[in-house]
Length: 470
Ligand code: TXE
Image (cartoon, rainbow, N blue to C red; front, side, top):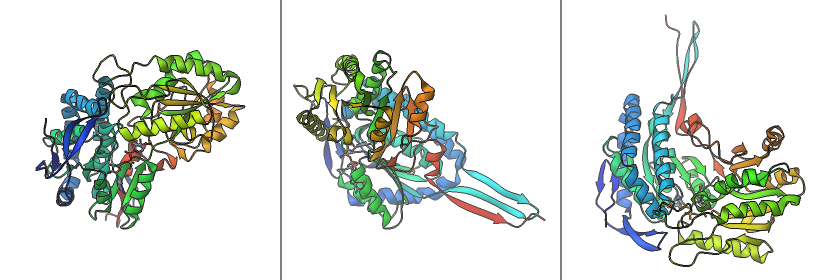
């Protein structure tokens, strides 16, 4: 078995304990990862704090290091992608896309200007606003996109002059640990520390006195706990907490034109995407036609282990997620929804669940109201588009949404009344790019990632004034 090591102060930390990492395609133990001890957590925090002042003074060095990190990731994309597939389950090509996207994010931030404004420079005086780093950032990344969602945090945090202690999900620590090993060559010691551990390590990080900022991606329930832990000493937080993203198809939208794209947006990564389509609202008079078109595309998805290059959809990432999806679909069936395709785990080893379309779903069913985070698409009929918008907005979440129609002017009017962080026409998640802010309203979280807005979350403003030059 390959040994994976934590990176603390630029070096491998000697493991003192381990936990198992399971391959979701087989449900068998794949590797062991180091279980960070309290002493090692302190060491990681101390290393980050020690490295931060020099790092914050070297803007050129930071930009150079981010570009170098991108090149290192590209050079090792094959190995990183194989690890993501092995521990997370997604098809290898998609794992590779994820890894390559993280290089794109690093390069994007490497050239981004730091917020800076001269407000006054005249006979009366001089006033300037600069963005200073916060200090040490605790970054807690999720298991659905372990590499790129970690880089969404690391890249802006480092550019702004912070140092980072990064922790992957206990389900998917391997690619992130390897990333830490690879980046030892291009980042000064202590600038990026990568630790891994069982679930309680997250709470130990957020309670730790050193970090000045917590950037967390995960569930709303844990996000609330992060906010509570941060309140004690007023750490800043960015919380990206998922969504229950609606797609609303208007009466003039043709199923044949849009069904394939909707199915891709619902089932990619087995539906384990914070901004996946999680419920679709269709006109009541076209409900059956939509169910049929969606079913054709969903049922055609090739499901299997991610390292098989014919496969389009892998397993769920972990047992808990499989159990949750199974329970939600069973419950929907008991409440009167009809399974048009799928509706059960696949026989055999691993955490596979059949791509599922639920006909006759309704608001009030947990599979519609909650983030199911699995390969399940509930189809909900509406009487008029305004009702669909009201149902979409009634959700506790507000991450992304989409409206589908050949008449984009009409669709735009409806789209703009949706309460969420991003809304797209005739596509879903089209605004998830390094240059655009990503994040949500209500239970979807606090703050934004990506673009200059994501950078600003890792800074604090300082005003500098001086008398006019003589
Ligand atoms: O997540 P948790 P889980 C959603 C999705 C899924 C659900 C549960 O709906 O079904 O979350 O997934 C750390 N302070 N998303 O159980 O509990 C802990 O160490 C700080 C959406 O995996 O959110 C571990 O790393 N950290 C999401 C992680 O939180 C704490 C992506 C467990 O994550 C902590 C993934 C604390 N008090 C799941 N307690 C998205 N936004 O896209 C635990 N942790």
